[in-house]
Image (cartoon, rainbow, N blue to C red; front, side, top):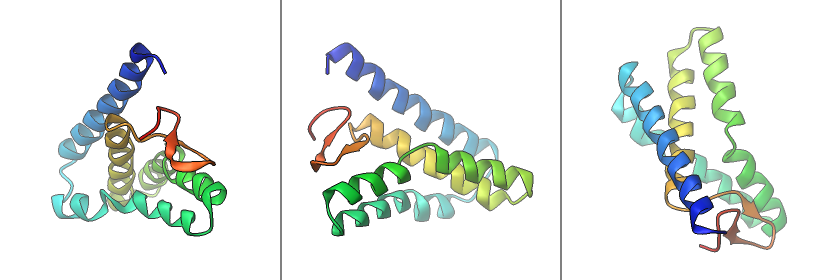
Length: 118
């Protein structure tokens, strides 16, 4: 991947992380809750125990913005702040992953991402 495109991917991750953090701070949610959940999306790596093909699919589902968006929407709709907080934390996790070069996984191995080889 060309450096210019790679820069944009990393920068987009930084923006997602910063926006998530700003939202979390502005809504005055618990920092203890943040630190408990920030690494929770990495549990989707457990799919690799089945194999690289299934592992990549499960990991990618857990690192898509669909999950955080669903939690945010559901939390807002039913007025459950903890659901919204969890969605924001999940989005922050995805953003920071992209900053460090972790992206969607290809089925040939955990280190082969849409960004590059890790």
